[in-house]
Amino acid sequence: MNISDAAYIAGLFDGEGCVTCKQVKRKRKDRGGKVYNQWYIRCEISMTDQEVIKWLHETLGFGWSAEKKYHTKPKYKRQWRWCCGYQDALKFAKLIWPFAQVKLHAIENIIDHYEPRAQELGDNVVDLETERQVRRVWP
Image (cartoon, rainbow, N blue to C red):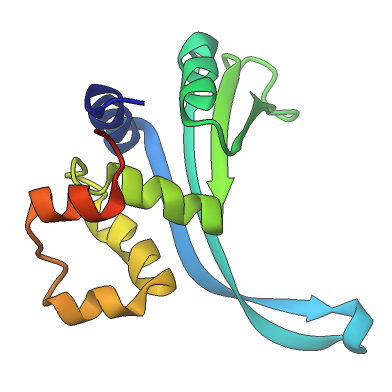
């Protein structure tokens, strides 16, 4: 993947994407029904153009893609979605972070969740060139 692909994906995600980074209560059947707080972390892009979702999945090489079905709304246009969660969501967030605009805060929440030391950098403001060299996302 090159820098223009990463920038395009960030723009696509800013317009069509969704970030979920929250704690939810889950009941564990294997633990006698005890309720636990569990993090739910996910990035998703949904759209009606299947080719774009296919390209996105092939270019990134992680996550999953499938048709999004609406069983109760048969007149809805067909939609496809690409999703990634947890560690893949972190990988995705780090990839598009330098280019994100609209969903920048939500993307930083994912990075801060997995890499708390990033919070020490002072509101996540770092030199972009240094960050590119450290992460080696592109040549």
